[in-house]
Image (tube, rainbow, N blue to C red):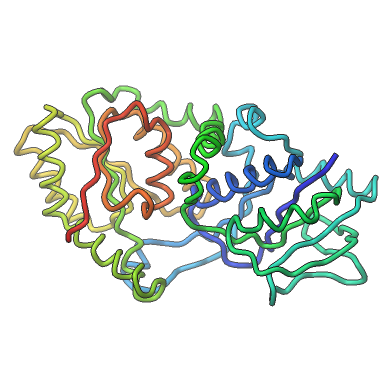
Amino acid sequence: MNYLFFYENYNIYQTEQLCANLYKLMEMILLSRFLNRILVLPNFYFTPRNNELINKTNSLIIDRVEFIDISNVLDLDKLKEICNFITVTDYFKLISEKELDTILICKPCEDVPINKNKYYTIYGNIKISSHLEIDYDSLSILNYFEKYNHCENIIIHNYNRMYNPLWYKNNNEEYYKIRNCMKFNKFLNTCANQYENIDFNNTLLVHLRRGDFNLTDILFEGETNEYYKEYNNINNMNNIIKGILLICTEHRIKNIFLLTNETNKEELNILNNELIKHDINMIIHYSINDNNYMKYIINDINGIIIGSKCKYQLYTGKYDRMSQYGRWLLEEYYDERDVFFMKLFD
């Protein structure tokens, strides 16, 4: 049996976003399927941040790293339909019982913990046959892999891909085959049942995400920064209100389910008061900040599960540049919903 292990150093900055990790897992699954290998199911590393403090200080607030088992999030039985995998615990037990021909791949200039052909991780040590450094970019690593597919065990150190996956463009069928098997577990679906009294067929989901984009000056440059400046323009509350009322009037919708990380309650009150004038009811589902990071994740997943059931959905910006959270939400039942995008200004 041949294995593929993605190891991420737990003390490096990753992301607070669950869906960014889910999309990275999709790419790991794609690579394991391409190579016909058993995937060592990774754990997720998060660096929680506080959007309210970001808004006040315009600086990235990172307090700590959280470590979460994928089984706490995904339905592993569903995942088995698309991917052969082994847990990290079982993998290291196997490594200790049987010495595998192992190659380690990493990017140049990374601090890779190797000493006398042993690769050190927080789970234990792995004896390696060869250590390579390559300058790979996203899935270009696929082409490189073929040279070393004879090895029983391939390890990739710090596969740090945190962007929206664009490989759906040239591999649409495989993309959705994997995506449709990435479903949240029974416990999380049960947690979301608190909103089952919503009339989903007469509800417009509105994903209003503005908390991150005060960071544009320190996180992004060039074209990306210009895009987010225009994104902020389109997320002006007056434009949001116009977009919502246009859709609600055309489709006779009387309910709004608002998913947001917005901390400006005054603006949300403006939105709510305007909707009341038009006899439209609004339910707000906030992102939360909590020292219990699993509680934060459960709340975010609740938003995805609930929002994905709404027949009508409104997003801003472009599909390719959406937040990972918004895109994951959009793709849950994409073909079964009426989806609207507020276009960027020319």
